[in-house]
Amino acid sequence: MSQTSTPAQSPAAATAGEGADELLPRPTRFADVKGWFWPADQLLFDWFLSYQRDTDPEGRGDLLELGAYLGKSAIFTGVYLRDGEEFTVCDLWDSPAPDDSNSAEMDRSYSTLTRRAFEANYLSFHDELPTMVQAPTSVITSRVRPHSCRFVHVDASHLYEHVHGDIEAAQELLQPEGIVSFDDFRAEHCPGVSAAVWGAVATTGLKPIVITGTKLYGTWGDPAPAREALLGWLEKREDLWHGVEEVAGLPLIRIKGTKAKVPAHPASRHEPEAQPEPDPEPRVVPASAPAAPPRPRRRSRTRRLAKDLLPPIVARAIVRRRTA
Image (tube, rainbow, N blue to C red; front, side, top):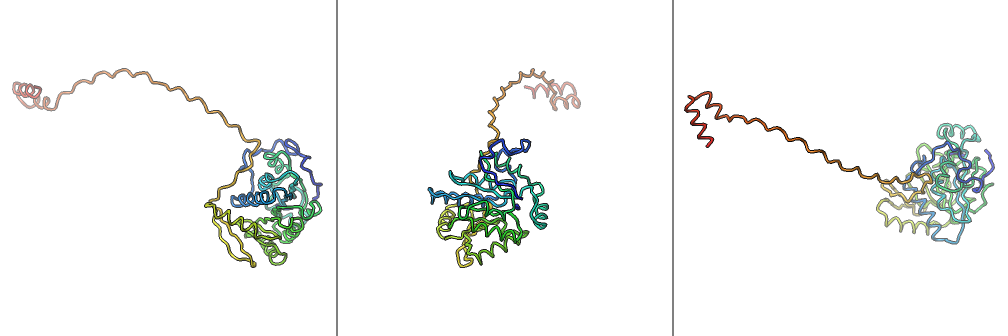
């Protein structure tokens, strides 16, 4: 999405009905929220965030999303926020970009983007907004404590110099075993993302764990525990293809999810109520139709021929015999 500086807004500062334009349409289901968040990545978000909860139930770690668009992945991520944790979302939304190249990208890809639309969507599924930072992602290290995050989703600018800065920020803000997810790392229209992410693998110690068609998931900590647990989970699923190959000296899982069964989605507070089944219409029995009048008897072919061709006396004899 991309990345002025407006003060951060705490979750308590906006609840349902506050901060969002009442005229904006409210999604009645998760699928109504516009965005690019494919089933395989929904499953991996669910798996990593649930894995962190299950392996460290007493631990705490904040959540961070850099680049939010209209909130699809943020809505999904917010479900996994635990008591005592903070979820921060940073985006430019409808603010001016900090430089000409980023401004051109915003005009080209996200001309309809607004903060109000994000808020309306998010509050359709959650009671409170996350902490909102409406600013370039370059400010995020001044708004989030170092080494406080257990999960960071990077989906902001596609320009190399900005992605490079987002990677440095993610490394500074993640806990030692925290997970980072990079979007569009292999898209043909985003070579800057690919160059920055694989450059980080080569130079910063970023260790990829798994890739999908759109995202790379990795850590600056020890990838082995999460990787082995993920492989065990994948072995039991028939809706996801996976393979493993060595990259940068470590096993890397590849996933294809064309038939992936998505996890349970957040429920919208605007979901229409189920309508009662209408009473079955009473069966109407049509009145009996009046009996058709009897059809006149037609003379047999033999009788007609006899009348036309034979002498009357012979014809009457033949007809009497056939009738008898």
